[in-house]
Length: 120
Image (tube, rainbow, N blue to C red; front, top):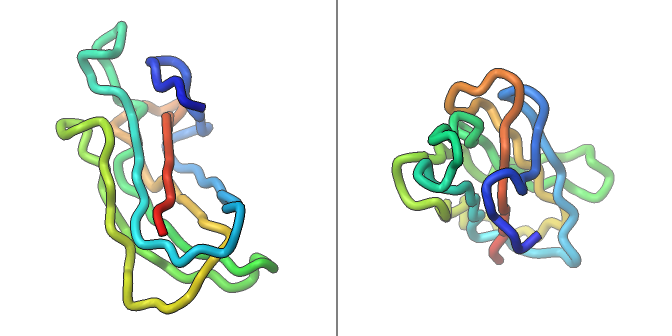
């Protein structure tokens, strides 16, 4: 969704979760962008539900083979939109991208993602 106002997020249960994103076509991914509002945008002044550590993998169509494209940390003190370059030595395209949230910034009940973009 285009609305990234606080509360309009993609909620994941717990601090560790995952999602598989199906792209409209096979893409050679070069970067991933993750977006979460700034602390000052939050009505409660708390963004502990923001993702912290996460991995990105390309997955084949059958879901059997997975290729790690990178391990990253979202820094809640930086800009709300952060782009992370993926391993570019791979000459392979994927139609499925797995985003695994390893941890968040302290919220025990859920983790929120506001926008994820795959570049390629």
